[in-house]
Amino acid sequence: MEIRIMKKTDFKEVFKMWKQANLSLDTYKNEKKEFDDMLNINPKSCFIAVNQDQIIGSVFGTNNGRRAFIYHVAVHPDWQRKGIGKKLLQKAEYSLKKTGVSKVRLMVDLENLHVVPFYKKCGYNTYEPYSVFMGKDL
Image (cartoon, rainbow, N blue to C red; front, side, top):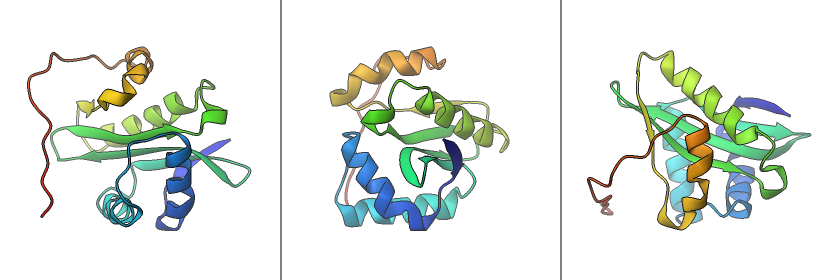
């Protein structure tokens, strides 16, 4: 298993793995646009885990110059609980830290709360709910 920088040509296989990992997803078209945008803005902090040419994990890392954010952490179900998610997180965190940010945040969807203990083991802390996550299509 190796971890490498994500490329735009990886999208189809990454999207397939996200579905297998039950990641909360938008439409294929919208996820493709977000994927391309993320790689354009953050080409050195988005990674995939690969085993024998099969994509088995992913992580997006981004920052706004002050704070970093982690998105789309996913590991194929056949490869979960083998340390791959932790390695992906560490790779993204290291890459983000090199940009000068000192804090990183991530969000866990309500239907995915079973992953909170994993993030706690990786050093993340929960914050009391202090806001409502909102969005709008433009």
